[in-house]
Length: 391
Image (tube, rainbow, N blue to C red):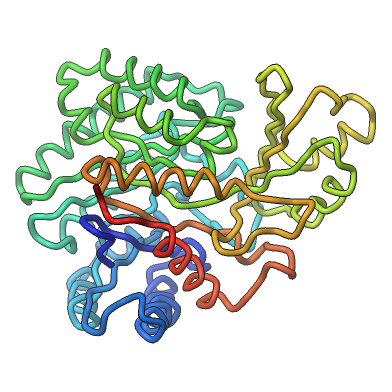
């Protein structure tokens, strides 16, 4: 849907689907149900085109590119007055109902399988995107720190993609761009590391202008809040460095006082086995301690190897619906998402792609769960209520 001069969608990675057949069923059921609900609730005008933030696995992407599937999908989009402007290309394989955790970073950007998958996603966008528009794919931040990846291979593959995208963009007349999504314990994870990575990427490229045009950042409000990076300063710094803001994920993380034993106890229902829940603690001197996952936090506190007394704030990578604050003593980082929306108001041309991303619906504690269409509509309402027209 139109979001002032930009586009707003929700990411379909909230719905389990790994094959193209399963993905199409999601689009025909959940996505159209969300659209219809937004119309009924007055958030989408009757007859207004509805934007889809599509998630495709590598299997689904390859299936969509075979036979007449893509032509049939293009017809379905026209018939339903829907359009795709962005694809989430971070999860390569299964994303629900199994142990995802570090697997979501595999294959990483040292692997040509990741490059081939991302090309598939752009070929799909080139075929279905509306003429004269821009289209984006979001992806992982190169690799995961625990993989000890060879950065030279990451740079090589990204440079190759930028050169390939430039050719495809010239052939199609589309503005095509990839957004690398910093995440806690990713190859680069916060503002400072992102700036340093892109400086190395630009230096390694023979045509750095192609990198600036086609490779940027997918700014996830949850992830940067986890890093204790203030949103306005972070976005300003990325733009000042000439890094494209490819897409912005409107999302929120868990936060709590680590000194509060009742808050730590309230956190336990969020310890589930599917996704990584990286945990970051900020000390009173501003330094940050990072833990790979929630079980490591609880185990370290219980065995006495982690003293929580120096820390004033704890944040946990667990996407919380924007319109549903967890009950005290837990809270969220939603105020940072509000800053992102305020920054957009003051910088309306800096980013055209916005996406609501709360993929953890299926593993939320029962007190936060609602019917999925109700949750998504509630998040749209929150975004619309907190967004102001561009200045």
